[in-house]
Image (cartoon, rainbow, N blue to C red; front, side, top):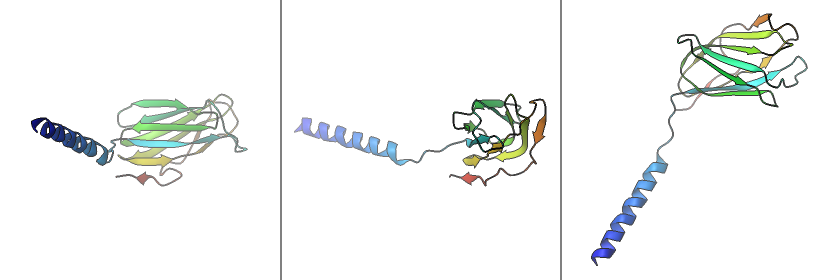
Length: 136
């Protein structure tokens, strides 16, 4: 009898513990930014360098576009950012004034112009090309 009680208590506590671990929603303290980098003909530009610089802290995070021209940042802290996009054979792009908040999911696409990478196209500061969605 005592063995059955111990086994029941053990099984019930395991079920309770496992049930609690799967029921809490995931919380994040980061924002994510993703998008595509295209040429003037809307073709993907592969291996383009995209840098997210937190203007408040000076911290820079760098990534490259994949074979579809897609870049992704998944762990940017909240703050004021400027994004720069560069690839040899194209004018660099600078987009200042992107404000990120905890839980933001932002989409920003860039179209690069053919030219010297030493030339920079500054995209008007302000909101990204699509409105951030906040997951809470």
